[in-house]
Image (tube, rainbow, N blue to C red; front, side):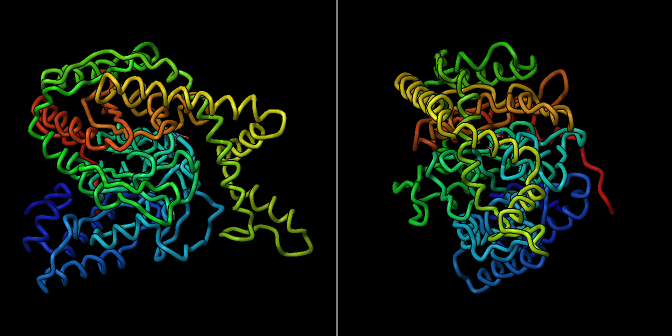
Length: 504
Ligand code: GLN
């Protein structure tokens, strides 16, 4: 019998639509897989088995009545625990939301349900999506299925690990500085950060509102494209949502799978392919560029000088927004409240609650952001960083006058051992070096598996960056690369990951 958990989302949807397997069978297979491997992986913070089976049953009933099914109906999905869900807790990986039940579904959650996608549960993340390893979760780290002693990337490590360990066929992430792309790179999966405003932020608990973007995670490029079309589109509930047609990403993925990139102009970002990168990452990156060249693309080097300042600018802008966004967690409105017995003032209760509820990284960023925004320092820090942000946008604009997409390694290294950078925030921040510019500028960007590093056998991601609202180009390149990688490596990269031990 086929192992349903090994099928792609497109295959699962076809199986359900044809009646070969029911959505309930598909869902049960994934719930069994979760029971068998998630004690070791810890991708999920919450599994909603009954809700998932009920959603699957509804799909089977629709099919039985002969009603049309949407293209991903019956496919199980893992949702990053930063989107609100009316029937499940939403923790954002933080103790401060302990016991909070959102009164409403995020727009993304609603769209998934309407498409008949089965939400299995909520996945682990760095607290409020701040981190590059998922070690900042208040509920313990997630482990990389390629090597359980290593990080699965962050902040959306739970979503990428769920995919790489076949616990879900689809996942949703959010990308503020790389949290969809970086976990995808280090787990050998696909992750796409749509153009800012392309997917609604309504019900996405804010980290840094001008940077946050939800997006699709999957094992194949076509699966990510199918999911992209479900969650994208204008939402009047989000003031920054773009009121324009969704780029034709599924068509682009199908076209790309033909393996022909003739005429496409690809620019290698000169600033992101030199010193400080792991040798195996650079080798696979160069190998991927050669493959794209063989597929007919024209490859040239492009300079984006301001990208080098992206990291320091981001680590001022992000904490500034975080210090303001996280002010709402005051012990009065949501979740945790500490010390309200006795005669303490509201201020004391707030301070006790925030002291207990937030972890070290959240506190570090709240303090940094409060400082950067304080009068007397505002211009020197926040103001300067915003100017750098403009320079980065201009670098992109200039580059996209001569090339259609830009490429770089997604991350400077492969997955690092759990604990290695836990006490060294600056080393941790380096993981975001290449992904941050696209958040600052708001353009579309993605990571696609491009090989395994020689020195450790771990996956490497190719980052592709496209202009605002040209998300389709990511899928064109990604699908062509996937096609070439499968030929070169004799199958999808993930099939080379070691089998996990299964709990009977
Ligand atoms: N690693 C980055 C950070 O810590 C990005 C996080 C994200 O994209 N949510 O801020």
